[in-house]
Length: 230
Length: 282
Image 1: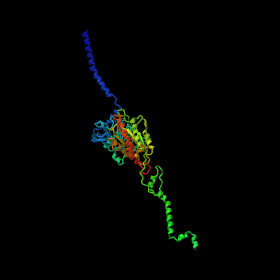
Image 2: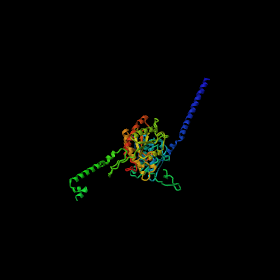
Image 3: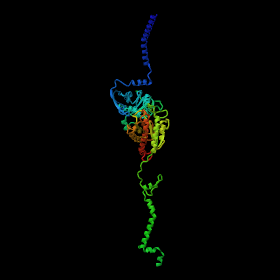
Image 4: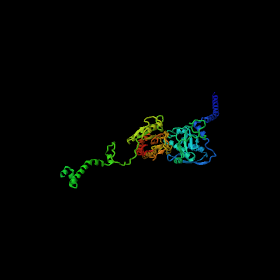
């Protein structure tokens, strides 16, 4: 009787080990598959969608100046020269430098824009007015305060000035909308000067540009028609 | 003939006109005339300045009876009222620190300290909010724009920056270019005041730099929504920051900030002349 009992225990354990050996790899595969099909957040989806086209292998590699927070003075910006493949097209070039700015410097403490923010669209009007449309994270994740908000805007404007000369002034939208402020202080209803040299000579107006073109048959209060999204 | 001569008193005088009697009468007449006119001469011999000085304060200054060239006058300053704006409030707490510090709460204490310092300098102070309300940007500007001879100071505490420092911001010079003459729209109400605001900001920042080490010597430019619609010299003052470990660090800064703003405003006061007056700016 006792010999039979031992045999059954050994057989049972053997079956359990064999089952586990078969089941664990299947479970592992399922976990991996589940992780793969997990829905990316809306923000991640946007980032993947908008940043996929920014780098082109045929673009020449050039030196660009990025403006991040100075390591010596946290209240000021400092230029950092890096090498980047940049398009010759001004609008594409602007997208590339802004995306690099969003990616941040090596030292993440010196970044000026929140890491979860994304550039959704960028337009360049014939008069040199750039329209940059960012995700909501730019408004919700930028630290509230005049200094931090102004540094964020200045880092975009100074980086565009240094690397995309056709841009004269900048309009910032958040998810396609004009907000009153970035995070409670800095005014987003106005244009920001990008070409500071021309502004000093009085050649850059901060007035909104006149309507570029109004589609036939549309009412007079249609917003300015923007060039095709690049 | 002799009798006829005696009937007319004047004749003997005429007859002795070259004599002593005529000389005596002339001398006495001159002396009487001089004595009678002496008080009048003395009262008019005073200079216009001494006459004005003799007036009681507030009494009208009498015009001298002879034409005078008015002395050069110092420009009349129109600055009487300070509108203090504790930013945020209500559902908008502003910056929040890790220790639970809320910008909107601290700003009421800061405003109290600034108000006390300004009133000690003789300024009349108005506040855009006194409790936990959140007036709109335009409502806050309206309070300043409705005053004649006001300046506007919006108070903030940042969420970043070197703790213990204070910065003053004004609208950028480029914003003045939107005012090209004619009627200035509400959205660009600050445009004609950009230069004055910068001067006001520099005066206050200079005082702050003396008290708070690490603060800049001059005011900075920033496109601040609240300042844009304010038709008066307007500055934003921002303390750093709500990230301090202890709220008492910020509380200790407040009297110094109030004193610096009051002294900076006193320095700025002579250069603020109301529009429409001689030497008016802008």
